[in-house]
Amino acid sequence: MKLLTMAAVAALIASPVLADPIAREQAKADFHQSRADAAKAQMQKDDAQAQAADAQDSADSSQAQANAAQADADSLQKQADAAKAEANTAQSQANASQAEADTSLAQADQARADRNAAIDRAEAARDAVHNN
Image (cartoon, rainbow, N blue to C red; front, side, top):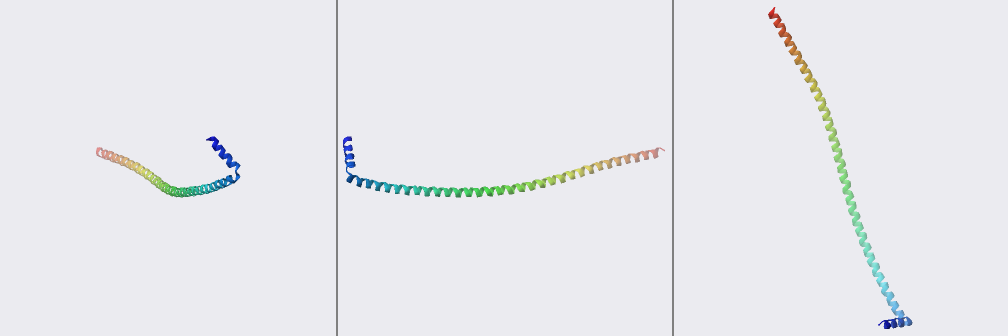
């Protein structure tokens, strides 16, 4: 079998008339195959570009959502800061009111002590008047 194949190949090589049409047919087949491969490669390229465009659109959409979320977070932070400032002001006012209340309580305690002392002096004076 090998011998027969080798003889056939030798005959083809020796006969340029037979080899030329075979080479032409092979070249045509190669040409058509390369065109088919090029068309397939173009379709793959187009598909890849479409996928890349879809991915870019998705990334753009995600970025827009992230930007909106950041803006919302910034707004909420500003609201929280304002609420904290209001709470600090209210605490300062409460502290001042407490200090005033403490002062008033101390004055009331002093007035009570002064009143009690005056009552004690009045009772002592009355007792002195009754005993004399």
